[in-house]
Length: 115
Ligand code: DGP
Image 1 (tube, rainbow, N blue to C red):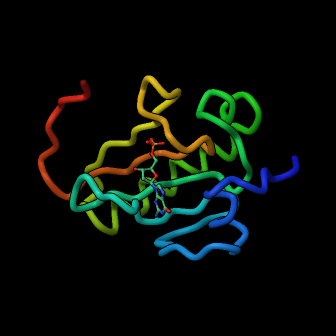
Image 2 (cartoon, rainbow, N blue to C red):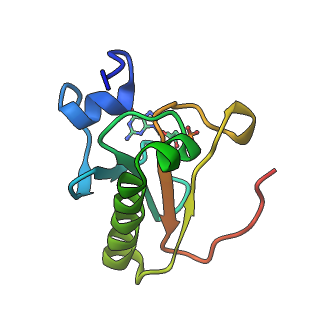
């Protein structure tokens, strides 16, 4: 698949833009969210571009497994393995970057106020 040249997160993957990478594996990377909502707020993304988590799951389940495994690793390192993993899917759900990303949130007792 060709990479969309204007995709911000593809540019983090290919190194044309810098970000603070906190973990990686074969098919995924993790980096800190620019606007953290919790003491731990890391984004985990597949190296390959897919728009959302359902598309990723259908096209490359191994890459989704790597994304989840990396989320767990980061949370083990930084939040005793207790975390929330959120994939916003679609603008109405709050998705603003259309390279699938899981938000790994933790490091405090999390509330539940999605609306
Ligand atoms: P979402 O709203 O679910 O699409 O989440 C997109 C997230 O991406 C949002 O929490 C902020 C983060 N983000 C946007 N631009 C940048 C950036 O340039 N660097 C980093 N590290 N994160 C970014």
